[in-house]
Amino acid sequence: MIEPEPQSPEAPGNPAPEKAHPEEVRFLAGPQSRLGEFFRVLRIVWEFVRGFRTLHFVGPCVTVFGSARVVDDHRYYALARETGAELARSGFTVITGGGPGVMEAANRGAKEAGGRSVGVNIVLPHEQVTNPYLDVVLTFRYFFVRKVMLVKYSYAFIAMPGGYGTFDEIFEAATLIQTGKIKDFPLILMGVEFWTPLIDYMRTHLLPAGTIAEDDLSMLYMTDSPQEAASIIRDAAIRKFGLKYTEPVRRRKVLRE
Image 1 (tube, rainbow, N blue to C red):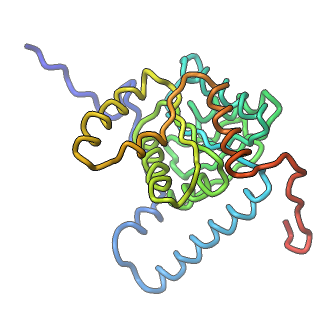
Image 2: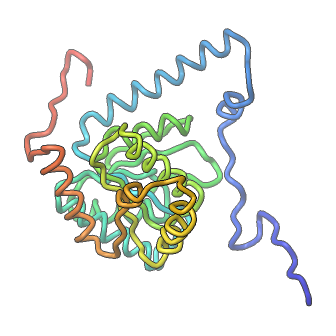
């Protein structure tokens, strides 16, 4: 049997690995000088402050996750675009990682439907270029700061098909729900065909092993319908969270907002 030659990282269909910002690499490389660590804390605090000040005014959000590698003629791009539009029509601001692929599609759908579109980008120079369908763009250096922003201002997560980053975000959200850090928070998996093997694995391996409970699976919704996803989120936001349609939060000149 002839073995196929392994692809190099630069081969077609296998994009070059993303590279983190050098500062984040240093941050995760163990103890540094005390002075350097002090200034790093200040940079991290400033990223949080900048994020809080900006996202405070964008309205109730729904976060959409998914692959940056999906092209615009793919069915998952079309599904994300329709989902973004449906969320916008329901009165939600669509927030994504701000990059291409599924993120672009969700932002594009929201923008085309007359809604607000936000991108919370990360410094990854070899991949993460912001898409052109954003009303508000924030770029962060640290992944964990970006994650906080995507959770803090959202009433729900929608996970489209994706890779490592999407799976990381799904399970982090599931852990926050499981541990009660966020309550009544819909976590919707869009793309039944894509996600069913994962749910089946959890049901046939994790449940029997006792590492999760049946209730942990019940927090996950699966659907191919943007209308159903929006309905689940509206129910959670209005009935469970008490969200009302009101005037947007007003900026205060004294705080230079």
